[in-house]
Image (tube, rainbow, N blue to C red; front, side, top):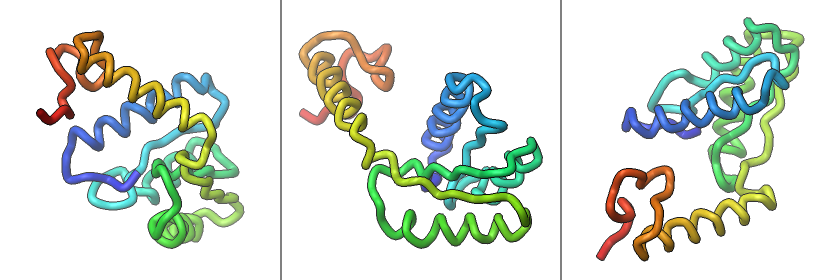
Length: 138
């Protein structure tokens, strides 16, 4: 992800990555969170970690919805710099997640959940324990 000055935002990203790793059930040699800037671990830190764990190919999944400057230039440059320290290890930067067709289903689900909560229904994962949507403005 981009990284944030807000520790809570970085922690959410790291929690997501840990959940992904657990759900993957060992399908990958190692899974590591990384932040492009503003926070640690960095992309270089994450590459070092997965290579040290035995990875011969590193897949870098930018946690962005859509392509942009960071995906086109910044992240590949960070990956290239990290790759220079690991000759013989293949590196692949994947497409952003927003381009995947299932993202439409995720968005529809979040909209439905937030609408239900705003109308008095159960809260989503972000608003659990509150009496209303924490993002709502009246």
